[in-house]
Length: 166
Length: 166
Image (cartoon, rainbow over all chains, first blue to last red; front, side, top):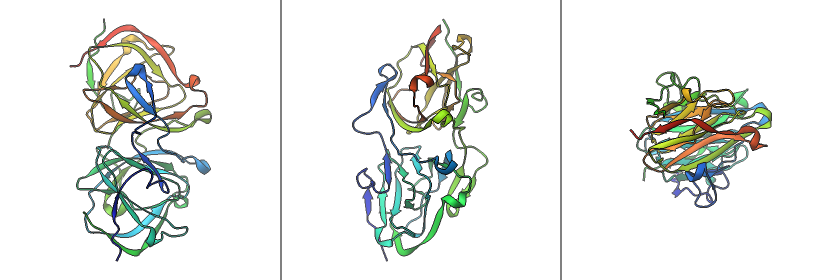
């Protein structure tokens, strides 16, 4: 049985999977007569391939129950998908690598710091969103698919992985 | 001098300016093995006209100082623009109507309930974002403009309008 270690989410650690969406420590520019800092391109959006369009959704996610067995992962080959909690709440981000299916040996579990979202790069294997402790609302920015089946691979996860709460 | 009344933000009141972005009381569908409710198309995104693309930004906005004099408004003729606070914090939404310039008589000031964002419809006159009491981070979804000057009209506000804190 795999019991993946929980890692703190950082841009560096997540670089192979997409972007961490958070206010950067540097960069940006002052706008609106000095009342705001603006940071552009905080996620590499890929939403318009093959006739796709941006789709804005809200997810109301129940807190995950632990220990939690990872039984499936999914990916969206044609588009990025962004998750950002509305209430500055931590959540779990579970990803894996693999060409045709996720490789169990590559499974990683990140925990956010409450001020972070994630943008999965196209084709990144990931677990459905896992809220922690309380019901959490997420903004989700993905692709309005003309043929949804073309843009969602959902597969059983062959490794016997169990996530613990702590 | 105009001292606009502050109104609670509702979808109905905001219908002429865009959408209120919040978890709806009805609708949606269950996903992810029953762990989440999903609500799609919570904002009418218009980001790809005339070669535009979606641009994801973060704004860190200082709290507004009151009384606040409204001296200018802006609009984006080619695209929608969405503002959603990351910390479930209330903010002010100031809009007006007018073809070539905002008509002072139409100025309206909405206050959100903390769980709301707004998506301005293309061409909607609005004030730069006004945070209340504390520094507030916003997700902003707009258009990556090839020629920014084509997509931002910023004009002096001719009415003598002052917003109070209460």
